[in-house]
Length: 231
Image (tube, rainbow, N blue to C red; front, side, top):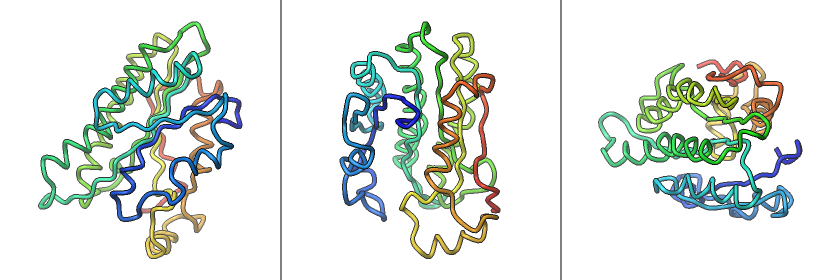
């Protein structure tokens, strides 16, 4: 998005990764920002825990304060949530719902409240998962909450269609962002026709397209961008 000329606010919540088996990025959030060229008049960052129902609006307000307007919202955050039918708890379900689904709706609501319709067409890009293509019985809290994102996409698109704001979602399939073990990488590598996992760059290209002018006639869609991944 920066390369395309956008001004960008990067949201993060590093404590989530610190709680996972793969751990937080060793360079921290600032390492990510540094890799993008460092904070500048076109790049800002903010930390917020989307389990807090007020956090989505604070992030949107931060973006407007920093850059004066908000044209594009990309909700690619997620809370990993393992859990079988036997092991999951109500707390697991509630937290996955709050972060993965409720926060998306609240982000879109805040975006809609602050979007200046006199500017170019608005864009919202959501992220779901492959729960609609195959069972994810070991990740029920995650799969159920991501299923909600899938189902909300069309309704949110209709709610904003009259304002020339498109809402679409991407299912990126397995993407190597650093979390899989070498065993995981090798086990799934042959499931991809190209013999490799998806990369962040593969998905970023689709996000950029959905955020641009060429996708103006597409809304309410969930795009499976998995490189032909065979389950």
